Length: 462
Image 1 (tube, rainbow, N blue to C red):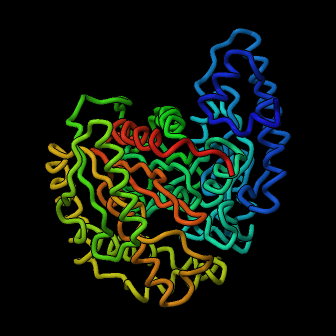
Image 2 (tube, helix red, strand yellow):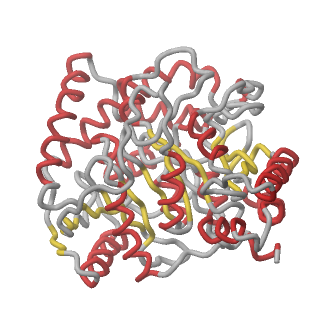
Image 3 (cartoon, rainbow, N blue to C red):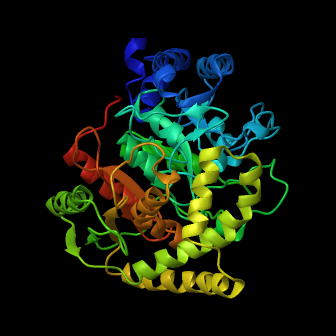
């Protein structure tokens, strides 16, 4: 039985554990066995927790035998990204200088997984400082994509994407400020949910200084999974309250009914689009129309302008502030990538930055009006398909990456949820669409994602 448990999604696995068909230890052993079988080739998990995971699984089985209440992820193996605090493990963020930065307290999202009964089996790779679409660093090395080892596994949650796609665990924790959940989901051909601003409580207790305002407004936590129902289950767990989080809101998991009307955008606003990505959007539209949605090719307001202002904010308020640390502690490719980005998109003055922040609210206002009639917007997850490794360390390559990433920036700029789901095939790769919805209406994105998933088929481990 253990040889098959790692193939199950979290929803199925949790149900089998709760009904006593398998134990938490059996599920954990199966996923750890899978981890050690495939991780030497992939390097998705870079901090191992075998003994700790098995002890936690035994304790979970003991609580279940004693008749204690069970959490929604009872006994389900989960991976955590190395850029969030987890007690007893370094929050190294892919940086050699931080390899001994042992956390003494859990990030709320880690605590939420524990409280839900999940078994934390390992920590996944990122680029240095989690600031590239390529998960490679001097501390842990490069993560490979199980679909094609010559193609990036994505970033910054590339280790999580590779782990979920290969069956190491059914749920991978990720976070996203500029596509870092949705891009690895696309590259590895799985599901990734970027949540609304305020939906999931999260902060690193080890951080002793304020984050840049852009990180406060645009960085969120989210799951990578192989099924949409697992993304829904993981969201329920990750959205647990924490009174210390400055932006967490108590919002229901399902809101009031809204018109089943979808705006299709088979374009990368202000940039170029790969034909397979445009066709994926139209195919998703056909799936939704067949399920009764009203689907129209119509553009929401100010997309190109919003993306341009996002780049102004990212360069000025995040990358320029991070640059000194990157040049002191980052690996060579990470430093090249950041230098090229800042050369191509130089930081702006304070007036331009404040103007971009002011317009952010105006764009969101326009979109929320648009979403009164079109609650869902379906766009490509990226303008291009998954690239080969290190595209971003040459000037032309970085120009290409910045173009591909444009459409991924609408969700962080506006603080709206976006669910990435694969649609169609292009060789070994999966094109991908993202479904955006109104604030705190992840349920609408997930509902539409399940329709697309039903037409495309469930994703199985590679």
